[in-house]
Image (tube, rainbow, N blue to C red; front, side):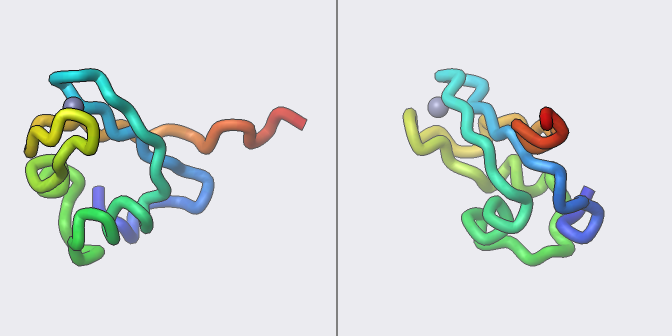
Length: 73
Ligand SMILES: [Zn+2]
């Protein structure tokens, strides 16, 4: 998966595997936060990201899901 593969309704959950700190981010926001080009894969971004809670680097997991609240009328 790369930035161009995402749809606007998709959001990324970034979870730290050490402290379980989790954040929801737009794909665009994630790529900007990781200072990564749109052609970079999610796997490479996982290795670059640093947890804002415990400051560990490269120990996050990125999951793709629908944006919360969409489609609930
Ligand atoms: Zn953490």
